[in-house]
Length: 207
Image (cartoon, rainbow, N blue to C red; front, side, top):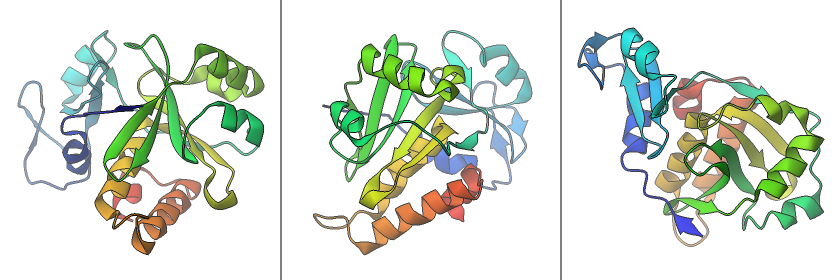
């Protein structure tokens, strides 16, 4: 397992929902509105705020990808317990996405120290995608399958990847002691309730 150093993604996520008097584009320094476009750097998975012009110019290239809001609940997702165990993800909470730099699927799960990357083979992804056609239109680097199987839950979502890193940051911030404490798991339950209600990143982070 590989611990991921994401270099400032948590602070940048907070910027997405900060009602600053003067927010600026990370590329050209132009003043931008409180609600603005966001890009992710494919190789580093860092997030950036962008003006409309920079978002169009850079958002569909090889280096950056534009984020777009997505929160889809998958009601009839086909994944049994044996298949999930075969993925060898050590906890029942993770997200999987297709990574352009990695040239294949990547699984990440949250914990008290942040995000940890787990191996996820092309074969596993192919079987999962064949059983669930909704995964076919998952946009590489910017959209993910979010899986919640904690405490008997069987919840599956297609979300923009900033929602996934928001969950990682939430758990890292709230974690106390060895087991995390009651507050962190209450916060996780609240997070998924907001996803079920169709909440955007602002709702997920702030309620």
